[in-house]
Structures are given as C-alpha cells and as structure tokens.
Length: 351
Image (cartoon, rainbow, N blue to C red):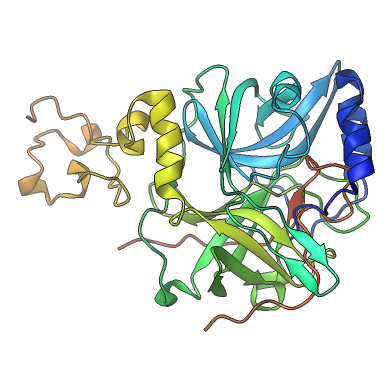
C-alpha cells in the first residue's frame, strides 16, 4: 500500500515546466516502476474508476477514484498534487470500466478541490510524517447517469469496527517492478487499527496477504452490502514494497467537508436524494433521512407488488506504525500512485 514519494524539488519544478503534451508520457514511464500484490481483475464495482489521461490513442491510469454522485468523484489529495490545477483539468479523465483499455465511458474533468488542511507524507531522517486530510473532490464535465454511485460512511468509526473486513479496489499494479496497472482489481482487507485519521491494514492479517500498491491511491475501502457500496476510507499511503501495511484516509472524519463540496455542485448535502436512493427498492441505512424501504411493510405506505418495490406512487492506544512510508513509492510524479492486491472476497451483510 503506497501512495507517493516526495519529489525532490528540482524534479517537481522540471515536471511543472514541461509542455502539457509531454506530461502523460513522463507519468506513464514513471508508473512502470511500481507494483501491486496478488491481483486479479474486478469486473464489477462500477463506481470505482481510473484517473488518468489520454494522448491520442495512448491512455494510462495513474490513480483511482470513486463516483459518489453522478458528477462528483472522491479521491486522494496527492493525486495530481504536484501539478497546476489547470494542467490536471486539461489532461485528466475518468475511465469507467474493467480497465483503461476497455473503458466503456471516458469523462473529462471540470474542477478539483483539495482539502485545505491536506499535509503530504514526508520521509524524514527520524522516520515518516504520514500527513493528514489526504482527500480531494473532483467534478466531472458531464453527469454519469448509467452508474449507481457509492455512499459514504457517515457514522464515526469506533474501536469495535476494528476487525471488519472491507473490499479495497483500485487500478494499480500487482507488485514492485510490474508494469500491469490500468486494470481494476480488488482485495478483501481488514480494518486493523484506527490511527491518526487513517484506517491501517496489514498484509499479514489480510486474506492472501493482500493490500494496495502503486496506482490504487485515491481508491476506496468499501463495505459491500446487499444493496449498496459504502466507502469507509480513501487509499493514501503504504510501505514502498507494498508488503507490510497501508493507511487510508477515513471518510467519517471528513464527511462534512466532502458534503460542502457536493452541495456546491448539487445544491444538496443528501447523497441519497441526489442519487435517487430513497424509495428505490433498496434499504439504505446510510442515508441522512430515513429510507422508506427500511420500514416494515405495514409502515411503508407502499401497496405495490414485490415486483414493483420502490415505485410507490401513492405515498405522501494506537501505536505509530513502524517502517518507512510513501504515498507513491518509486514514482516519478504525484499522479503515479497506489495499486491493489486481489483475492477472493465475501460480502458483508448489514443487519
């Protein structure tokens, strides 16, 4: 699980002064240095998209993001952090599908907002500073109405949530030195520890010793319920070999700021209202308001048949992790980020 190393200032300055047309080639070359662990393709999880760029017939993935409304993506702040906003918007695109090469939809970007309190990961002589608030919101230049967005974890995570199995998803590579990014992969991972605004997940505790790696940065840790995908955290950083642990930024701690950005786009803070999740046949427990689909039949005022459910037309001590950290280990640029480990996973049923 990693996100990206700190760029030497002279390298960052060189990249920022490059002509826009050359940046995708440089970023793609940098990505070939990274790796992911135990990966296998993920044909579903449609709200999870690749963030990258296209130059003619050449397209590549550098980060991962999650669709949380038809027009809004959630990703890591360090995705694109080293480049001017206008460069990211001009070149960037979201790729929907099982891989960048097999994307059935490619959508441009119109805006990116980084959390104002974002602090990047920095390696120091005495050890890494893991940063904070590694989260950003991207607005697409057109609405995507064919994909059901994910919801966000709103309730505060507590110690009893440690040990929960989630699903990490991303477009990263499968191991250090691999050159196989751009394919959507997933892995079951455990919430090992809540620490300094992150969910820590250790390879040794995960099924198949899975975890995230370069190219997976910005991707989600998901609770997979019977009806909805619920994002608990955004992939942020990990060890440079993708072999020990990862840290993902918790959405519950930054929920209100995320909703500020959503409200600026949609005029509403209610993801279930924006996404049409109320009274749609699925019981959504993570909606701000009560979902009629969660009420017993006699209380739901829905006299439709089962086949028409949802169409109600008559209703009125946490120790600091050891080892070096990185947010895009081995990367030549901030866009070449984390990748994922894949293994069989099981759905977690909500009560």
